[in-house]
Amino acid sequence: MPHLLTLSDLSIETINDILNKAQEIQMQNLYREPQPVITANLFFEASTRTRFSFEAAEKRLGYHVLNFSAENSSTQKGESLYDTLRTLEEVGVQAAVIRHKQDKYYEDLRDRLSLSIINGGDGCGDHPTQALLDLMTIKQEFSRFDGLTIAIIGDLRHSRVARSDAEVLTRLGARVLLSGPKAWMNETLPGEYVDIDEAVKTADVVMMLRIQHERHNQGMNLSKEDYHKQYGLTLERERLMKPGSIIMHPAPVNRGVEIADELVEAKRSRIFKQINNGVAVRMSVLEWAVNKNEEAEQYEYVAFK
Ligand code: CP
Image (cartoon, rainbow, N blue to C red; front, side, top):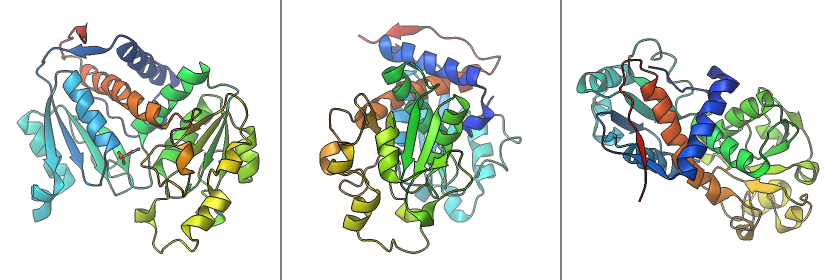
């Protein structure tokens, strides 16, 4: 079965197929009757959106979902991730959604397992399903990527969302602007570094990033107020935005730090729309992963009553 580890592994054609299916699922409010697919969600790091939208997606697809608790699993006795997944394979699991603090935790696993690994976020590495739901949100707004300017602002060094989005948006023909504290610049990201006011003024999409405190070796040397003033989307900066441009943020949001509290649910904010799109995108990804297995039976969708 195929894995979804980073979007750079997928062709633009496959990405478009996944987005089109997600749009169809959302427009027609599709779900499936119970079917004999077993999936497992293994979260070794905290999550609200990714974890519960995968679980909602799995339930809407009629899958049987095993929720793995890292604290109560044999990983606590030193069992490796590989042996854990081999065990789940023998139990009948066909796809495993995994979030892990280690960058590229999947490298050692990808060619050794028959179940599909769906990356729910690896350290500072990638967050492919977040990028897909971001693409869905941008496409719903502008119906294209080519020629758009997307500003990604904040903790670029530690953000897996920044990496996944910058890579795929560049491939889709968007111009990516990057801005944030110098100490958190990330030379490995595709995009042009610009001053924050310039980024906010120019962009069709202003994508703010959460400060990844859990991945910093030492605390931030700025107060929350100073960070907000220098690198945040303040009320004053929002007034610089172009008509028709939108605000995005992967969430969870540090209100009043990377973005002014009042802007989180402002008219031009799509932050909660992103979360809503996450369910359809994850349904589409799961179906892509599970049904790529040539022996898998195909099941019909029905409209949710
Ligand atoms: N955006 C995102 O990945 O949120 P969670 O950490 O809550 O899953």
